[in-house]
Amino acid sequence: MSERPTSWGRQPVVSPDRVIDLDRDRIQDGLFSGSPVLAFGNGRSYGDVCLNEGGTLIRTQQRNRILGFDADQGLLDVEAGVLLSHIIERCLPLGWALAVTPGTAFVTVGGAIANDVHGKNHHRVGSFGHHVECLELLRSEGGVTRCSPVSAPDLFRATIGGLGLTGLILSARLRLRRVAGGWLRGSSQRFHGLSEFFSLSAAADEHSEYTVAWLDCLAAGPRQGRGVFMQANHAPDTAPLPGRRNFRVPITPPFCPINRLVLKVFNWLYFHRPAAEQSDARWDYPSFFHPLDSILEWNRLYGPAGFYQFQCVVPPAVSEPALRQMLGLIERSGQGSFLAVLKIFGDRPSLGMMSFPRPGATLALDFPNRGGVTERLMRQLEAITREAGGAIYPAKDAWLSPAAFGQFFPNLGAFLPHVDPAFSSSFWRRVRAEAPTR
Image 1 (spheres, rainbow, N blue to C red):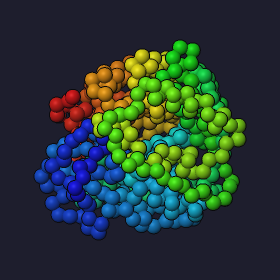
Image 2 (spheres, rainbow, N blue to C red):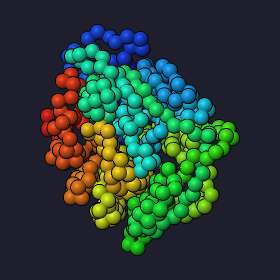
Image 3 (cartoon, rainbow, N blue to C red):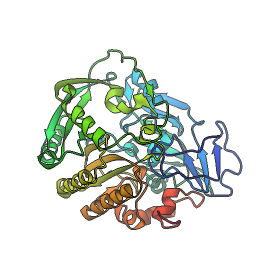
Image 4 (cartoon, helix red, strand yellow):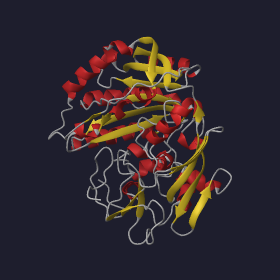
């Protein structure tokens, strides 16, 4: 391929030694020879977890076939390069939906498994890995292994959320869920502080499958922690979905146009827009689950230097004070975020040894890359997360220190024996202190 693979944040910029397209019908000879290898799906991870400086990237998107679908049981067999958007397009008209979908549908099944992605319904159904029945894993030293909770269960648990390090995921069987159609009904409501958010979320958990909030991360003083809370359930509505018009950001601007003034204006308008307060809201499937997917290549808006995303989870007992501390720090730094998303994770334990979701509040933010000032902010947010006993999401990370990684993922020792020795990534070498850190 001519273009160098990048992560969605377009940072850090690294160069693999070689890039191989996985053959559609056979496994090429010599796939694991030479430099360390890593699977590369659609590049929707934000940091360096999908990158492999000086190594080999194996692109999986040519293996993108739906292999079979049991429309009675909702069991879907797919190759690992299939995008979630393709599954939605094929199965939603048949009355079936993904049990868990992240904020973008442009993620491969292999990537969704490797990062054990989560959605707006974690408090009800857990993460993506809870709905994987089995998978096929190509290991460098032992051929293809079929993994499930009952067959090679330890390897299965290591692969769910295993950051692509346990081998090459070839295919998977997913359990879908029945839905009446592609519509959701619920409500949106402004809240004026974190305490109000936690009250709304606790009340909504009892009767709403999907809950999520947008935060105004630049609001200060008595307005700190204000935002918009949304809750919804699948609706018994079989009306056809409206056609969706996509807009593509045509170029990367020569500088990042996102600054404090632009953010303040955007946040004010978003908080006060009429749609922020609706007692009977109706959304079509893509508008509720994947609103940014209608803006193709929106990551270009951050300019040539790219951007960093930070996502943490902090335990329930300290969620509110830890989030207050983070929001105060962000407001003082002036480095606000368009995409400030707050949600509550439920108590269902993750299947994966290295999965990120765990009980608590999770906050996700995007920051334009402004060099040293952004690096300092990331380090300070990491410190707050560590002090709170929380964790940072590897799929969104580009700065996590080795010491913090070991604290955030206490099952690391159990995971290490399952890492395939032929596999590695820029992220893995960084958090294992096997390469110079920035």
